[in-house]
Length: 253
Image (cartoon, rainbow, N blue to C red; front, side):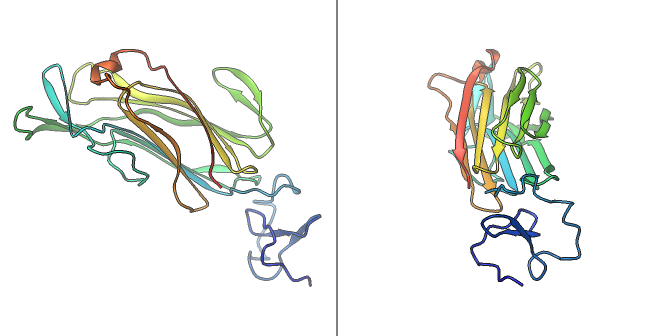
């Protein structure tokens, strides 16, 4: 039996290694040889992927300690950009995708929720009321393949058959203010496991701050986007259109 070089590329499922010209079955060590390799067999047998799993998370947060509007005051998140997946936010959306580069690529988990909203006395800063909003929307339209049917813009070709695409359309409003405007994003997210890149395109509101990060195969967080609120914007800005353009293409692995 051939000795597997230490630096030999392996398939995402761990059943095969690449000898330079073809995939070879790993029958000792590594994956369980009794398992069925067809379950997660590589889609393109000649393709080596840089990402087999990825977690991405996006936050809408208020950098200020306190914000006001219409005579009411609220606590913000009082922070700058933070790659911690549990960082304080007004709206949080996370997704994990597994099996990239195989026939079993899938969304394995999602987490979309809002942080606690706290109304305070404008003078003293003491909390007078609190509540948690319920977000609308989330991650959807997951697809892997050579083409992608964009729900809003027709059918597009992708770079290769392993490319995974999904949408994030999510919004939420202040739960303590009647008829409050919503804040959110409308993103098209593209993951290319062959090149190890992630692209995020779409629109967000013009206020407050927005951030997104990715962790490929359990690695460190890589920033996808970090958008600071433009000077002169405030909660009243949310009464306008959600049309601030977002376009990012990032190497994550």
